[in-house]
Length: 122
Image (cartoon, rainbow, N blue to C red):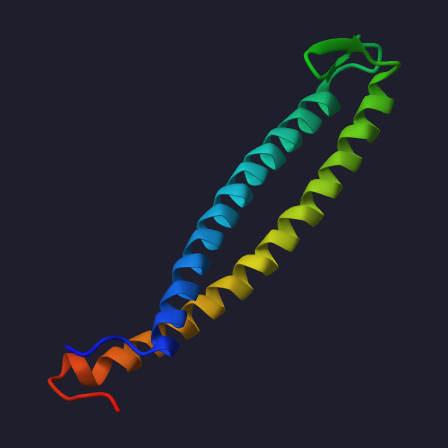
């Protein structure tokens, strides 16, 4: 089999890099989804709690008494909105990467197609 053309070598390198980017992005999105669900559960439980309940919030490795349930609830909902926006942005990035991934995969398959069938690529 002849050596691969520089174009195909470049496509393969891009493909491998894209695979790594996609894996990292999916992992990041998965972690954010988990955090988002956790925030939603926290908000639900906070809504169920009586108005006069004493609540604490985590700040780094400390638990600090919150001024009020309503203030903490507002803070949590704002954080959830921000997280929603981030997850949607990651969804868009993932979609774009998957499309590019598929395009490169098809280009590489076409480049190997004739060689795989016993013909030569010119």
